[in-house]
Image (cartoon, rainbow, N blue to C red):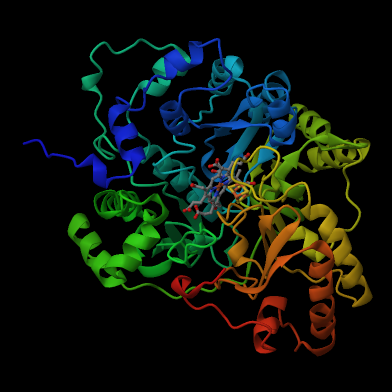
Length: 566
Ligand code: SRM
Ligand code: SF4
């Protein structure tokens, strides 16, 4: 029986996905079109499922318009790396590709993935082939599918961490789309003559209503912001063994100015499952969202809204029907922090790991601070692993005593061994924003470092330089740097103007609250100066900044996403 689809009721993307013939669209034709550096509109949507976004250089926008030229189109390519783990060889491969085809930088994202920026259309295929030659891929790194699966970032830390890393890989593989379009288009694998043979048993022919995100946390570290994800697993450890996972559903950061029905929301813990049930639970939660998510309005199509529209009890019941069994009662757990713990640490087998601060996740060589070169040489000289964290940082993991010395020497040689970094900067995240992000209203990655330097002057006066405070900035309300979980959050409103949010907590379990709107830099500093002075003077021992601003009534705690105001 065929079901009639009333396309008029659905978002335009639904038809594009349906008509794409399992993600083929007219990508081959678009790539071959020599007239333009862009691809057809429908292909810009379908290419996301293959791990790339069409963009243009926004710094050149006005000048190109003046010269009556089309925008300077290029693409970002996102590499799927479950758990963020790559070999040193793969690091070198990515470094090579960034120089050959991209803008000579690597971006380490907030979801433990690599991004290459500035790849022009004629280099797309070569770049994707290069990534695949390095045994990585970009499948489902973007699009209405399950995205890169995150987890606690250091499998070298202990057997428990290795176990969650392996699980993140398995979940990622299990939820991949099955279409062969990627292999045909990018890797020149044989065209399937009758593409009707393609089926998507999990996703169906219109895939998910919207993107879907998963992470796994191991308490006490909430280092991948488990409550910001559609689906979060919280490992429950007894006698040094993972006995299972609490299941949290319905997180998401995206919101929109002027649309109150689009808001950030924290995931809720709905139960507990055994390690053997994780794949099934992931699959069935994704299927509930596939079948019940909103396909009319993409502003309301994330799973967080499916849950708020139908209620958490409905969602749980529905999930239990799909599963054929019930989740157990959730187990107690405690988080003590989010963010990364920087510096050298000894892990299992007496091997060392260095968590290195990478400002804004941008790996580049600048003014004698040659991070990119240093990491390349390190990768050429050690075994072990390179691990991208969920906070845009990098762990050089699993190295011997001898290799540790080499790493330190190479960092020093290239000017990277940092002086002391403030507790604020250590806990900073900035999304990409300008010049590549088409949705940015304001700078983030290119601006936050200098704003932090100015806030550090205030911290110094108040003897707070070492105090760890979570600060995050995004260039628009979509929330790519998870700003609504920060103790100090900035969201770009227009060029040079930001909303200031206060009152997220240090453990990533509370949304922050709008404190002041549309501030310039001078206004930001003027607002923060007395609050930080008050904090230094009047906090109770061990009190974190985000808790202090609530206790002192600078803002009220946001208890539910639906109450979040811009
Ligand atoms: Fe994001 C869209 C960059 C993590 C929520 N995100 C975008 C795009 C692709 C802009 C676009 O659609 O044209 C950005 C590309 C900018 C560029 O030039 O690179 C972009 N997002 C990023 C990255 C690179 C930010 C970073 O600096 O690290 C992160 C890549 C992650 C990855 O490797 O997959 C990134 N994005 C996130 C996160 C954080 C997370 O996943 O933990 C969020 C918030 C969590 C969530 O999904 O709710 C996030 N991005 C969005 C949204 C809002 C989604 C929503 O529900 O409303 C958009 C816009 C959209 O989808 O319509 C978006
Ligand atoms: Fe772009 Fe907005 Fe995401 Fe920043 S938060 S990368 S400006 S979409």
